Image (cartoon, rainbow, N blue to C red; front, side, top):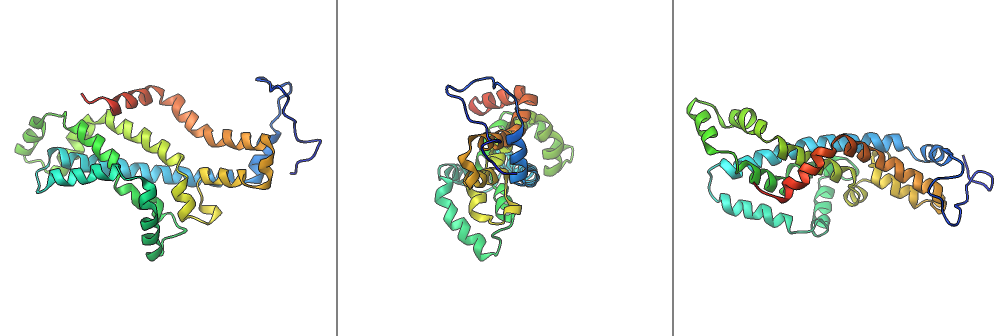
Length: 245
């Protein structure tokens, strides 16, 4: 499909909020011009994997920093907080060189391994678990329960609000992730949707407004659906992330 004077719609001046004639031409062109289904699948898989890994490890580390007793716990937690203060752009080049030496460029491994250490998630999980009484853990320990049993069967069920918060934040972050996939992945078949849409906007077709708006809508639809179904939890997550009980 190609654009010509008979197929492209000219944007009226002034623009109309409701178009005079409805058409799905731009969406059909966008679906044929870029492998958006592949981008959807890649982004969905990476979002699912990274969210599961980052939330679980954040809760486990938060539990360790909150209820655990080990040497230099305070210093290690300060180091976690220090990571939050360093912009990713400062760490990007050393990480790129590291993954290059490991022969992991142009794969998904650089996009996944970083999920094992989510500093903000660890901080938020630790702050929430601090509000859980120590008596619950001590009672379970007296009954012979191990640390993993206490964490999985007692602590996690009480952490629903903070888990929902971390899941929402991570889903949004992963779906909108752009810079790091652009740097470490060069194969278009392995790219995420944010980079794929940017590549489309950088092509020759980007001079037409219709396809650019169409691909932008297609890229935002999943997050719009997430917001519609999780609106209540999103509001609660924002409140939880800013207020400590």
